[in-house]
Length: 212
Image 1 (tube, rainbow, N blue to C red):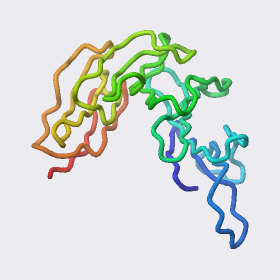
Image 2 (cartoon, one colour; image 1 turned 60 degrees about the vertical axis):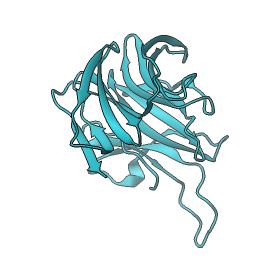
Image 3 (spheres, rainbow, N blue to C red; image 1 turned 90 degrees about the horizontal axis):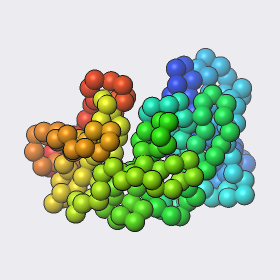
Image 4 (cartoon, helix red, strand yellow; image 1 turned 60 degrees about the horizontal axis):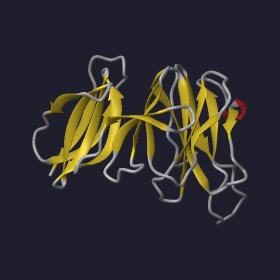
């Protein structure tokens, strides 16, 4: 297991791994796949959830979208941020594709009956938040692009939290789920936001910060 993000339902998780290399091999790792593990069981019992042998150089990571129980699979090619996205309803729905790799960055924040809330730089180099349908079509713009680039976003504590780069430092803006501005998070001073964590249904979220 390497280069893996872990998506964790209760006492179970999805993770990415490569096939075991041949002894002494110096070949690059290829054919990364997504597997499902139950805590307390042997790894040999893990279940293969997704593989794409036709495109062995793609890397993958899985997350669980806030809102509905939907597994999100991100596909990456090399160092490109223009990821592909596939989705699957848990526990055992069929995979369906939202967007292929190579178009733009797509970070799925929320899955609900209305589709998917996504932070993307599609047709917006500085990033924006949109709603897309099950075919990957943008059907609504929730947070439009501004002159300050969105570095990353999260759906936490009933809100959308956007970390923007402003004059080489981070600013954290908060929006309602419909995109309505709802203020900002006061941070101690100019610095870098390392990450934001929490759940959509929580009342609080956690923010990692490092000053200059």
